[in-house]
Image (cartoon, rainbow, N blue to C red; front, side, top):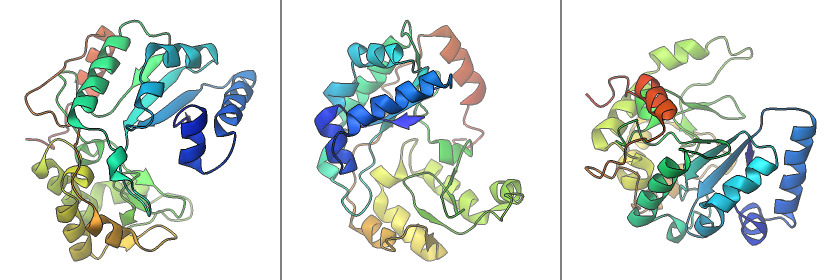
Length: 252
């Protein structure tokens, strides 16, 4: 899976390099030549919404041999978070509507992990459906939440034990699910930072400033649209999500 954060200008701005978009397309073509299963990922924000949330972009990726497109919602984190670039509620709703409509007949698979088959919001981390392993081996709650208390060992043989028995992950699942069905990092960063500090979680980045960054964050719109449910229309995805996105008891 290759991240594409926008077309020419946006890709250069987001990656801090030149000619990023053209080189990314070259990477896709190399993958296609090697007969790989190819995915493209996009973190949708205000500055790339119109470039990437449209049928033309989906068809462009399909022509390049991409098999699935994974839409994420931009999380304003890091040393330069740019919260003004986060989607507003209307844009999140429009993104959900777009995904549901395009899944009916898109020339590739469109994936998201933010809503179940009925269109109710969920958090994969709160469900325990997935967590994230950093390059250092830290088992993090999710990719943008870069603090942890456990690390995998050299051969990863303790991973199942961490997933099943980590009190830190379990308490964070409960905290997140109790807060809303959306993203606690976006909707309640103050509460999250307080929890991480109380837990004495370790910063897993090379910056060493993550906790202070979270303390400075202000709430932005999340994907929990409360009673505005937009259910799946594609029968395959509706069945798939009903079977695998049922919440694992996280939301009662």
